[in-house]
Amino acid sequence: QVQLVESGGGLVQAGGSLRLSCAASGGTFSSFAMGWFRQAPGKEREFVAAISRNGGNTRYSDSVKGRFTISRDNAKNTVTLQMNSLKPEDTAVYYCASRKTLTENTFYTRTYDYWGQGTQVTVSS
Image 1 (tube, rainbow, N blue to C red):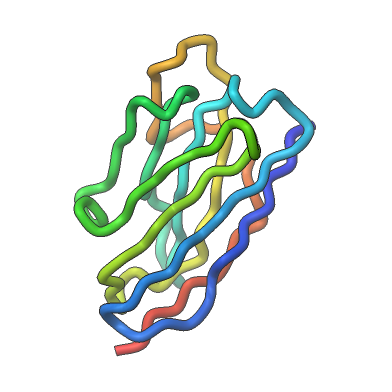
Image 2 (cartoon, rainbow, N blue to C red):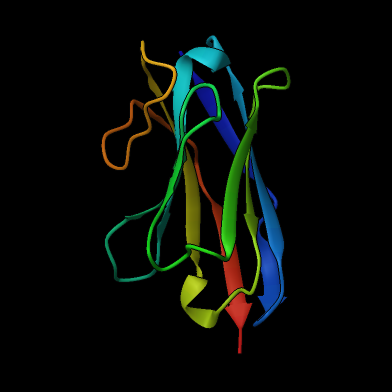
């Protein structure tokens, strides 16, 4: 059973930065593609960013492209989301997710196998 634990959320002013981390355990981290999603109050969960097993391929939603960066450290079993130039509309609970894959360069924007419990990000105007 894979367990994912997010950290790094908090309250920040618009224009500020936060760095979210997700620590994985219970599986071979390098065999998982990873993703970040978010859910704002009253809205559906939405895709934010994804990264392939080897870290070579990434994908971002249009709303965060150019401001957020996803990365991973397979030696430390962690995936990170660096969020810069934050906006009030980035306020949400952020979740990391994992999906086992046989291909090293594939990322996913929808279906994942395991999810973390989420971390709250609040951006004040």
